Length: 159
Image 1 (cartoon, rainbow, N blue to C red):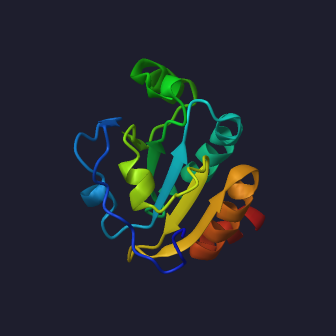
Image 2 (image 1 turned 120 degrees about the horizontal axis):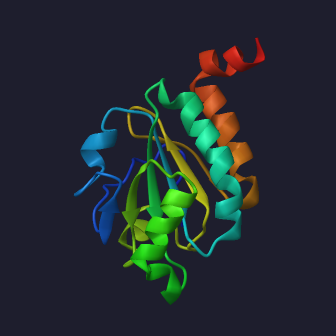
Image 3 (image 1 turned 180 degrees about the vertical axis):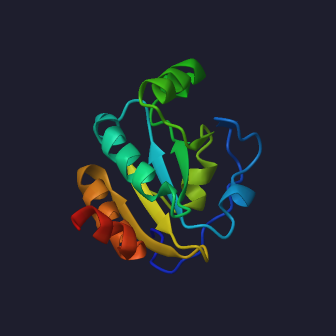
């Protein structure tokens, strides 16, 4: 059963490796902050298509305190090549702290039973799930949830 609205942000335990300057866990990094967690894989075409749109959203809400954590979740054996993961992080300008979840411990912690990528989890500053969205329409759902979470920022764009 997937996570439900209001569920608590799981602990970031069990990552195979952390990239982009975070060495152990993201728990302290996101504590008390609105947080977007997104799962992706190097073999995921939709992930690649959505990365520029996701970057635009992250940049828009960063000044409102939005923290972001990327989790690379391999779907195939070839997805576990760390050099390929690092190359894609660079290519798509993924500047989030990034976990590599080769053992799927974070996938399990987030109750991502189907192994969806991309999948987006948005938590409020109290660590409660506000929305979960997956697949090609995930960015649209995420955009609406961020606009509700940060209405002053959403209105800025339309004013």
